[in-house]
Amino acid sequence: MRLAAAAAGASRRDVRLDGLQLAREVVDALVDRQASDVVLLDLQGLSAFTDYFVIASADSERQLRALVEAVDEVSASHDGSRRSNRPRWEGRNEDGWRLADLGDTVVHIFAVEQRAYYNLEGLWRRAREVVHIQ
Image 1 (cartoon, rainbow, N blue to C red):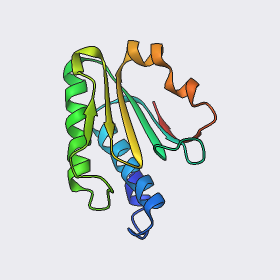
Image 2: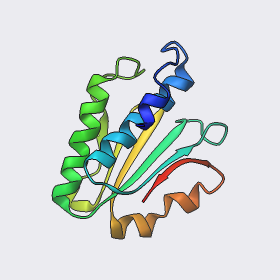
Image 3: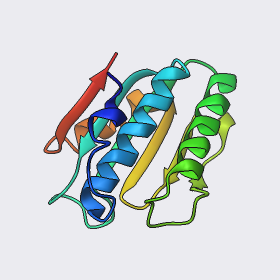
Image 4: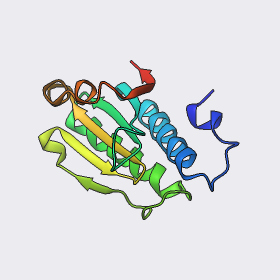
């Protein structure tokens, strides 16, 4: 069963649950595009700026571009997002780290080397790991 489908019965009026649904849809899309080491962290109670982090690795710059497109597609199709349908992206593909601000969910797509260097999972080790797909 797809992660997003598990939360599909939830009320779209519940912003926190809606943020989780969006995060799960992003995870599904990234896995479909062959992202590696995909992690969904629950930051509720730990962060004032977002509730969820989705972190994934790309094996090449080309794959990184494909993963960015996947996040754009999910965001455009998600009617419950508190922000505009187009995510605000930071970073450049050639730098090996892209960040999308989707409101309740922040997506980090890394090249493998940059992910190891920045170690977000270590920085946010108190966060609850909701999903980890290798």
